[in-house]
Length: 164
Image (cartoon, rainbow, N blue to C red; front, side):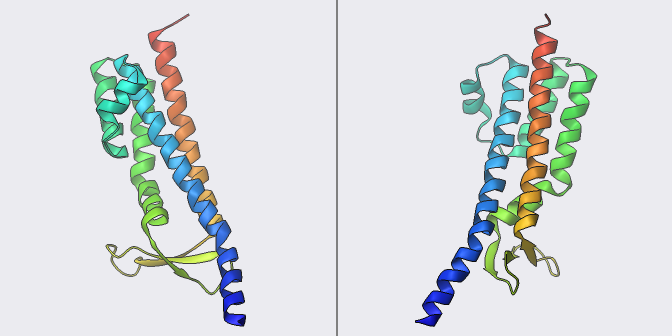
């Protein structure tokens, strides 16, 4: 009986970890949506059409598409530079850390509010890593910052295309 109680308590300890991974997933989906809106704005197409045409792309090809469209439509240099900078932020390690949080195989860690994640396709020594609740929250916040910058690009495209 004590094993069942212990297992339930351990499961409750994992709730913050699981919730923080959900935070990462939510933030990533909003970033993906924001870059689709940038593409829609550059192409002057409704968002639904952008979803249909570009929604099947992964995030890096979406940023590549946005860069090509910005160049094709002769967007102002600050817009192009910011799209490039955002792609750099995502490429640097954000996408890898997001994939680890979402796709890593979980196992218990000795510490509370911590989990071991194993990415089987990664080489040692980074294949298995310990990550804390706070690590996931910080990752979600970094993704949120990239999403907010992407939304600002969308707004800048609107100001460029439709000056007052």
